[in-house]
Image 1 (spheres, rainbow, N blue to C red):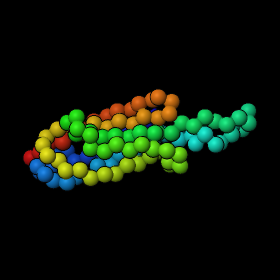
Image 2: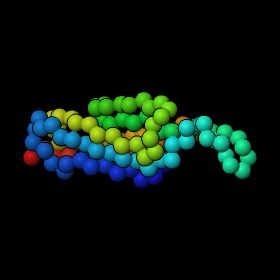
Image 3: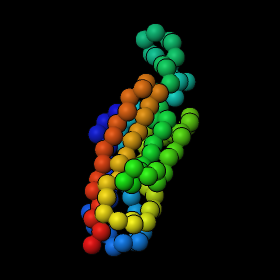
Image 4: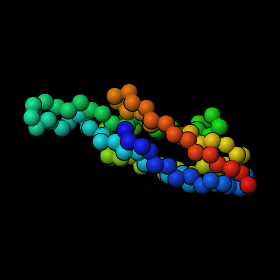
Length: 107
């Protein structure tokens, strides 16, 4: 997986609803494409899970299945109760896990 891109406001008011946007680079092999040289199916390898948590409490978790586009993009809204850290996690079929986090300050 490539480096994730995450857009989160650096600050918010207590109780404010913010919009979070994420994108991660991933080729997303469906398992239905044949290798041109060997003629064998290329094994499926998709991002199969995305989650976000704020100060350790899960905000969103998405289990993904076939027909997911290349470079999956997620956008969601959440209420910011306090200053804290928003942690993101992506996992794919090959067992690769990518994580990143962003801090949000309540002003």
